[in-house]
Image 1 (tube, rainbow, N blue to C red):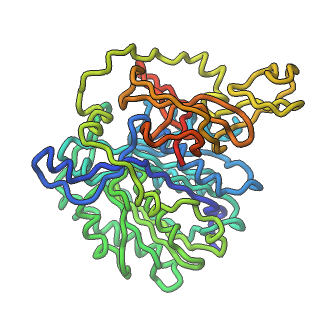
Image 2: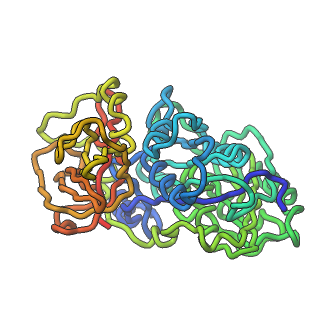
Image 3: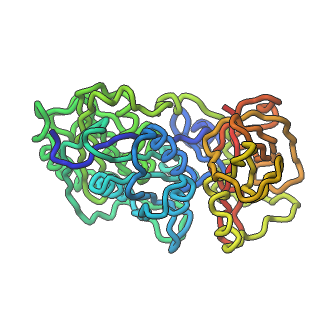
Length: 462
């Protein structure tokens, strides 16, 4: 039995649907950018929206009978806001009670481990998400990836994986840095970091493997922003067979989360997972899968998400990341969202909460006090439609509306359990839609004006 009070009870990962071919990068810059594709967040996604998607996937598998998490810890190196907490938007989008503590642990890649350790210590949920931006032609551009993962911790009796041991070693190393406000970071020569990190990795690995059944782990993962560490991982870990890394490349604070989710997708009951994160030191986490893991895996594995994608052109990607300043559409840009108005409508705006009439069952979107069907007043039950599937009743293609990726496609959606509303369609073009198409709601950023992000829900074709 593990000495830790809380175990991992559910998890979820989210990989954006867009893919950038590295060959396109190489062709545009007349250089070698490697083979394959890079996972790319859409223009309306940021670390907060990625975190919501992963957290929803994790809590979906958490079980209806389980209590809400005690806290939410959000780790990212690319926060949508400074000063203002980003975890609170995730908290609101998940519809968590207001007594659930939510805070950011961001700032560095190591904050992902900090969120995991804190979540495991308190029975909270750790959400790790990042959108990695590199200068054109850089290693972060071609070797990075955007993604998120979330992990809910609860009573050990309900765990799908018990935490066997933690070990950490800290050292001040100037091998990767980014000044506040800069879009991309800088890296020192990789061999310098490798020389400093190697003994730390060996030390923390030996410490946690001392708690393993046979001094070995069935699944070994090493993630690092230092490419030399990633390449030499097998030689750095004592008593390790095959060693894997992040399946999407360097993903900042999310690297350790996406890699762990991928390992949990594959682990069988009784198998152990050793996760080593190398950033400003070395951290090792040893877990052991329980008999419950087969019934509580995430619905769509990391490998399945990675295998499907939608191509994005290199110029469009650069525009989305603000690295290519293109002429904007000749349309009025959106106004800044009002703070008081957003606060008054927070349940609708963030949690997609409508109201269902207690007398006739009519669902109102947005919520209303007076039933549009039977006219009864103040006899409503608040009900969130986030995650409820629906069908397209009709749709329109707007080629005049302002958008970083025109045209804008809007669809009128009829939800399966009642309710109708018009949503913008994400991750799709006009040819992807049809009347009757099945869609799901996704939390996205509608626009940004004067530094204020306007978050709301869109729909995506199944």
